[in-house]
Amino acid sequence: MSAGAAAIENDHFDKAVADFSNALDSGGLDAAGRALAHYHRAIALQKTGQQDGAIADYTRAIASNMLPVPVQARAHFNRGIALVAIGDAGLAEADYRATIALAPEYAAVYHNLANLERRRHDYEAAIVNYSAAIRLMPGNERKLPLFGRALAYEQIGNLRSAEADLRDALAIDPEFEVAGAKLAEISTDTGPRGAQSAASVQTAKAPEPRVLPAMLTPFQSASSGNEGGPAIRITSSGGWETTAVRTAAANKPVDISPAAAVEPAEEDEKVPADRLTTASLRPTALVPHVTESSAMRSPATTAQYRIQLGAFRDEQSAVLEWDKIYRAAEAVVGKFEHFVQRADLGERGTFYRLRAGAFDGVAEARSVCKALDARKIACVVVEG
Image 1 (tube, rainbow, N blue to C red):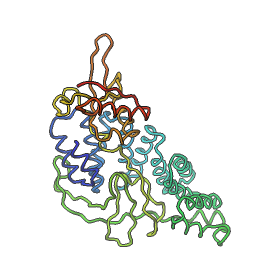
Image 2 (cartoon, rainbow, N blue to C red; image 1 turned 90 degrees about the horizontal axis):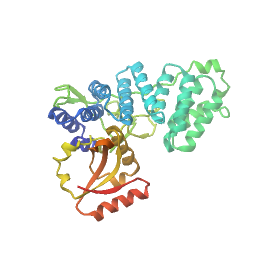
Image 3 (cartoon, helix red, strand yellow; image 1 turned 180 degrees about the vertical axis):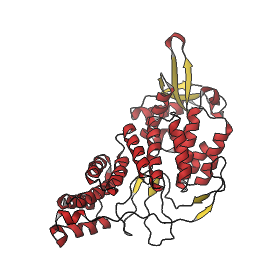
Image 4 (spheres, rainbow, N blue to C red; image 1 turned 90 degrees about the vertical axis):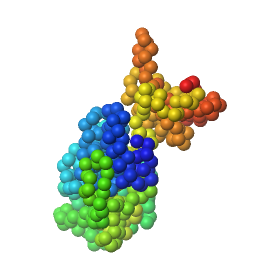
C-alpha cells in the first residue's frame, strides 16, 4: 500500500496499479484496507486513461461502505469524471449529486455539475451551480466558474451579467485570453453583439471542449482486470495537481486525469493551463491504518515513544480525525506512520486510540507535540 501511494505521488501510475493489485492479492488487508486499495488503484487506472477499470474499482470501493466519508465523496466525484469521459452524463450527474450530499462545501463538484447542465441547455440550473462554485472556490480558480456562468448568461440573453462575470474573471487573471475574447465579442459598449436580441443570442451555442486522442500502448498489471488490454498513456502534471492541457496538434495527449476537476467551458487553443487540487486526499493520508495486531508486526513498534492524538468510541472516527489532522498539520505529521489501537477498558468500554510516529527519545516526541499544540491539535506522548 505504501509503495502504491508513493508511485501515485510520483506519477508512476502503472507501478501503482501493480502495487495496489499485489496488496489486494496478498490477503493481508481488512475490509477498510481493501476499499482504500480499490480506491487508489482506480485513481492510477484513471490516470492512465483506463476509464472502465477505474469505474469498476471506484464502484467496489463505494459499495463496500468502508471508506471514510471524505474519501467516499471523492470516489463519487472521480467516478463522475470517468463516466463523463466515456459519455455517460446521466450517471456522472448522479455521482456529482452524491458528492454534494457527502461534501456540500466541495466547490469543484458544483462546477462540473453546472457544465453538464449547460451542455444539455439547462442554463438556469447551471447558473445556480456555477454560483455555488464561485462562492466556495478559493483564489484564482474562481475564474473558471465565472467564465462558465458567463456562457450560461449569454445563452439566456443576459449579456450584462455575462459581461460582469467576464470582467471579474479577467480581474482575477488578466491573461485569461478566452475570457477577454468573449468579452470583446459580447460587450454592450464596444460591439454590435450587445445590440442583438435575446432570441438571437439564445440560438448560439458555445463549442464544447475537445478531448484529443492519445497513443495506445500495451499494459499489464496483476489483478487489474485489464491484463493485456490497452492503456492510454497520458502526460500528467506533477504531484497531486493536474493541468487541463490545450494543444494545437491533434496527436499530442491531453490530461484527462481524475484530478481534472474544472475544465474550460469553451474550445480555444490559447486557454491557459488551469490547475486544481486533485479529487483525492494525499495518498499517504489514505493508506489504511493498521490494526493493533498487525501493528505489532511492524518494525516501528520497537520504538519507545509515540504521540497519541485522541481516543474515540469507534474506529472510523479515529480514521477521520487523522485525515483532519493531516490536512491541518501535514508539515508536522506528514512523515509519520499512524495506526489505530483498540483498547478494551472493561466497564469503561472500548476505545480506539489514534497514535502516530515512532521515537527513540522522549524529547523528540515532545517537540512534535509542542508543534501540534501550537496548531491547537491535542497531543500527548505515550510509551511503547
